[in-house]
Length: 305
Image 1 (cartoon, rainbow, N blue to C red):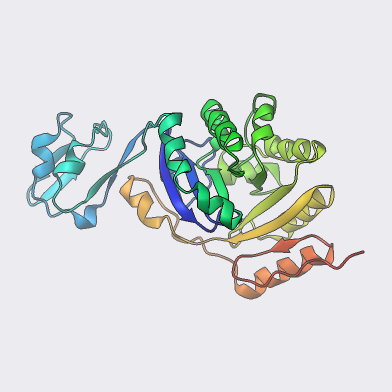
Image 2 (tube, rainbow, N blue to C red):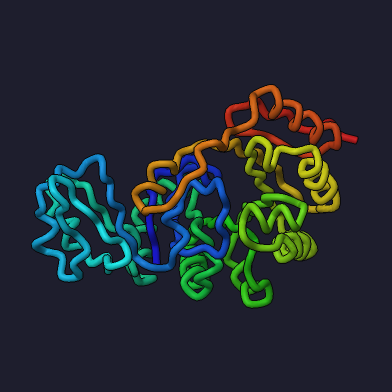
């Protein structure tokens, strides 16, 4: 199940890339900007602000999920089966299905379209999500196919998966980006719904295999930018022998509208740390000779020593 394939991406690895977003994730991070990636099923976005109440969706919905209440239209999300009939009927484009059950062959054909640009730019294909390793067989076949075709691959992962089941897949992956949300297990469970034990074990086992890792740290003020968490990240990353880099990712409410469209609650109080606070985190990491950087801020490599 795929929820997006983004061609000409410049943010998910080096060069020109195509990013494949796998649908389905075992985590429920409070700051997630892609809540449509959580479910493994096709879902329906309902953008209420676009709806004119014309009722065109009522006539085509066999599940009875739409009805008029006076001048307004009510949508019963529990009754919706995401068949897509209302999406096609809506003149205001207020409805959109998200999630396609594509075959490996169909995805591969899309990936191969830009192969010449991958090679000329040093780019390739990035597997993201959701959690790509939640669909291991599809990930394995796509990664293997890309590798055999001479297309470089990268994966963006939460690290929350059964490592032994996934080990062989890494033979077909060139670059690994792994999130570390919080180093305190109890806080990690509260913020994401799962323990960080498996994630930290994944990081350490990949490092022991000699695999270069880029560790990504989401920064949400008061949640993940605390002294405790940053100190924990520093301690863990100093143990890694094959660390490629640390990327600090300041929170941005990009997904706010998606939550409403999916009928989910959204915490509007979350914010990113101030610019100066991020600079201090970078300085602390670089003082430990860790290769830390932040998009939009100048990268300062650690001094040799």
